[in-house]
Length: 392
Image (cartoon, rainbow, N blue to C red; front, side, top):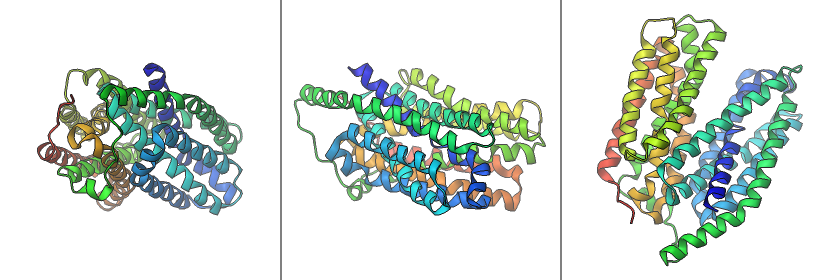
């Protein structure tokens, strides 16, 4: 039963990743259907981000009432509505409206399943869980690209991803009894009744929660900024051609995916705080390599190394949340951590873009290093304020 449940959870994270890169990849062609300029994609993306933050913060009460399984199913259903809605839209304003269910669905899936895995499974599963998000995030653009090659058929691409998402939705509906049976098994093993989770306001007062939120904000913002500006840095600061810059930038996402596979195994030996420290050191080495004055394969190696270093940070912070702050507080704290992460992924890429525009794109590695240092300091403050309590 547990193996089947884990498989369903992994599939849910693939479903969460599928729509993530769709808008950015489709917009150059998609905007023509709406007579929209390039900048208008930002309002759709911002709406998704705001709703994702709201969903993460508000998820605790919904998950306590209906359970992680039902919240996950409802969230995937919202993304199905958004994907098919995008494909049939004829007006730009409808895209803004459809961004709401996409954002709400993404935040709720992440909060529900990240906390569920943190509570009931080993750290390796948290790393692999977020690796499967990467599988979905890479699959979406690949499927879309096949349709864009057919006279820019972005609508067909959205419908194809919507179809995959619908299939995953039915699998998750079939898996609902597994969530229920597993929860019952956990309660019987511990001989206890489910506790009422604390509020977000109470969670914020717990020592160490604010540094945890800040560490997630810095990490996720740094991750998103790298994904957004890596190719720009390679073309403008390194003088690489566009196609080579795009290929080298993909090394970053490859590094995160491979790193999370490896982190799953390493987490059996090393504690989460150690994994984060190792990751931060590797990230720093990657940025140094990236900044070296070279135009050969070194920039790709730097981005690959930086991605590998990023890999264990997010899963380790989330997985250790119940041990740091208590199981009763974990759902609210995870929701707040993820909200911080999504705020970071919204604001920090904008800040990096603004500062790079003001001082030059050659400063992008230094700007990323500044957020890396902030993340490392916040993680150490979290470690001191809320040391890990071993589980029984």
